[in-house]
Amino acid sequence: SARRAVSLAPDDADAVLAFSHERQVAWDFKAARTAASHVTELDPTSGWGLYRLFVLEAAFGNFDESVTAARKASQLDPLTMGDLYPMALAYAGRFDEAMTAARAGLAIDSLSAVNCWWCVVMWVSAARGDVANTRLAQSRMAELRGSGRARAYYDGIALANAPVEFAQKIKIF
Image (cartoon, rainbow, N blue to C red; front, side):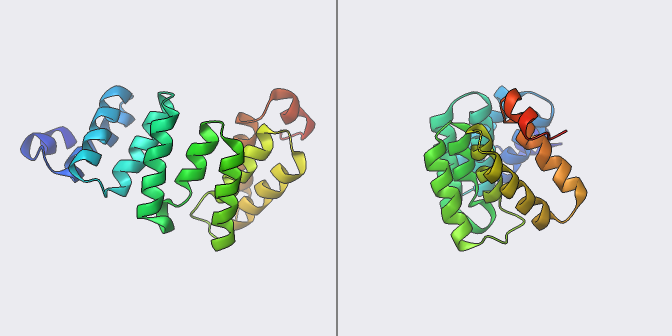
């Protein structure tokens, strides 16, 4: 188990990262966040440690810390984690900055099915009540992911992040 790995190698960033994941899956978010923070102390270049810290800090409402972790991860690994920074900005309600960062990512690679730049465009557009851009981004994500299941998934994201009256307007379900 990850707990055993950490007991055998407490200064191994990968073992601590596995422990953070294990704690998060077990819904022990405080321990998961503490472990993720420790990973970034052990290895400040751990993109996955920064990713985990970004998610957990956002979950605790610590948006400045979440944005900082996401920015670092995006800078360290722009191919895999380039979308974390605009996502963190969106979670923090910093929509103008999120849209600017997402559009910059799209300018580099608008065909990526890995990065979620289109997700950020969709979330911000939905939060602003912009039906046309929400649908455009939603359709683009479904095309890139290549399935009707993806469309249902992105419909769910739009619904979860949209005001009720907006969700009713675009008739997601």
